Image (cartoon, rainbow, N blue to C red; front, side, top):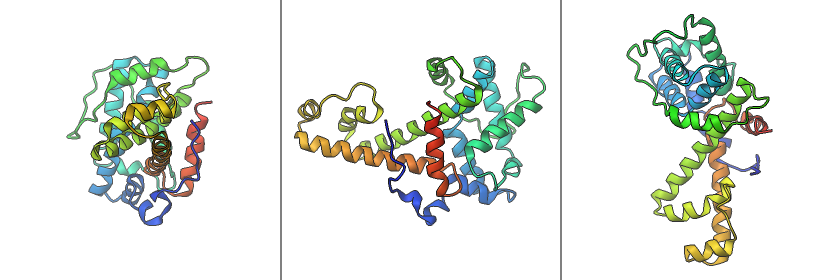
Amino acid sequence: MQLSTSARSPSHTSGFFAATRWTMVLSAAGQGSGTGFRALGELCQCYWRPLYTYLRWRGIDAQEAEDLTQEFFARLLQGNGLATVDPDKGKFRSFLLASLKHFLANECDWARALKRGGGVPPIHLDALDAEKRRQLEPSDDLSPDKAFDRQWALTVLDQALSRLRAEFSSAGKEVLFEELKGYLTGDGKADSHAAAAERCGLSEGAVKVAVHRLRRRYRELLRDEIAQTVSTAVEVDEEIRNLFASFR
């Protein structure tokens, strides 16, 4: 699916950008801000799956990768976690992977039973789902870093799709969303507009308009989701290009 990087969204406005989760973390770095820690925790909850994928592609078994991911977040979210954030390193994706590599370099014994927490609530990990996704990845010429970037891109797409589904659900249009989402995901369930119109009890023209609006809103939400992980509006388009390059 081709996504235009010129679509307008709230992330183009400086006022919105000042309030994204990652910019809140950056502004709170070194200050011990509760708001900054909450924003960091929300980002970690959303983006743990690429880290798990990276560990698995490093050759670490599934249970140990789950333990290490949890331990990494526990340490990151402890009292001095924001001290490691460099405001000059603009992307959460880059910060998180660099932090994980540093953590692994200093983790002397991966095989030991890890003592998690320090009073930090654990991040919810659906490792079974992550493992199923990992097994679908092509095994040839995929480095751990490339696997991380590809899973990050998939996570961003999933987050945007989940938000779009929630919007339709709150408007009482779950059935319409399930009917039309194939036009977004390319999963083979999108047939002719006429057939979709017949199933939905709409005119073919109304379905075409609905699909156009669905795609436009999805692009907006995708840009907004990416904006949550970078520090400037300029970086949104760059991040879109980098993430979609991971599928090549």
